[in-house]
Image (cartoon, rainbow, N blue to C red; front, side):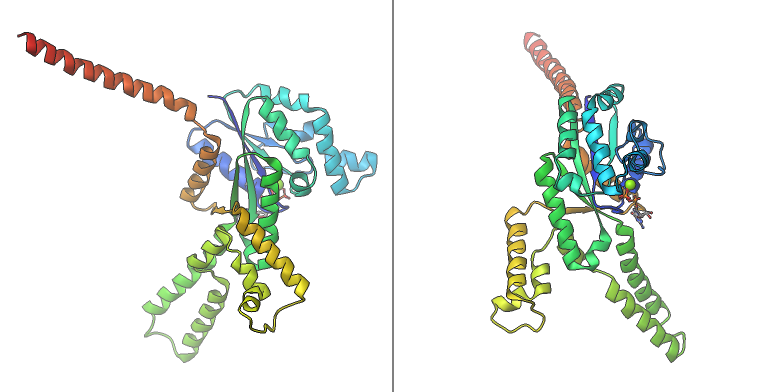
Length: 333
Ligand SMILES: Nc1nc2c(ncn2[C@@H]2O[C@H](COP(=O)(O)OP(=O)(O)OP(=O)(O)O)[C@@H](O)[C@H]2O)c(=O)[nH]1
Ligand SMILES: [Mg+2]
């Protein structure tokens, strides 16, 4: 069936390790043989014990202690050390020919955007006949700040362009957003059920809470603008739209800043490469949807299909031949 892997990347704390653990659980329950590979030399604990672990080769702690490196320089050193000893990884992976690997990467985005380190790891994996899908995690909390969200979109795009592998962007921690949205709905329902009950103060309190939740929650239509990045979001924020319409905008910053925003809008629009799949780890269907999108990018299981279709064709052929034989035998009677 061949070798397949997911390379799970993204900024620090974006939920990469949680994503890997969720995928491991899902694969186990659906009967897929998956292994966790840890490429983070600073990782401390895992829900699933990694089958292959860079810490068996080198740890950040040792590098910092022995070479007096800081945490970021130390991490780059560790991964360069891995590249210089790539045979170690080849040997480790060698034993898992037909299994599915989930590779948890460190959170320093420089590794994907500035340095060619992860790209070279991918090249090595490719040479060992491994099909790779990059999974870039961005957490839903980025949506709260449009500038931060767009810097996340640009970092995802930069990783896609640099890595040159099939790529899926995932918006993680959706339970946090959907939770707020769910609370508003529940509140509306409660208000509907209890519209007779409670005194004026209670009703006011309920309305205030609902307004607070409404401020936090995103409607699904608004959410769509973040999953499929709408460049107008940043334009709205910076007042570019107002300027285009010729009105004076009180929020507008310097002309240079607006020109930069406009250029970013143009870049995102021109490439139109980045879109996110939402992942709510508390919802099994959501996990399944993300996995099937990654499978699609990896063409996972596609080499099985010809065998299935051949057997269907064989069956179809034999049914046809029975019918023809029947006709022939009828004709000869
Ligand atoms: N509510 C919620 N919390 C999450 C989710 N995913 C991760 N977290 C939390 O976010 C924090 C960071 O998660 P990790 O999975 O360690 O993130 P990471 O990207 O591996 O972090 P680094 O390896 O340090 O870069 C932890 O406290 C997790 O419990 C999620 O889907 N929902
Ligand atoms: Mg991690």
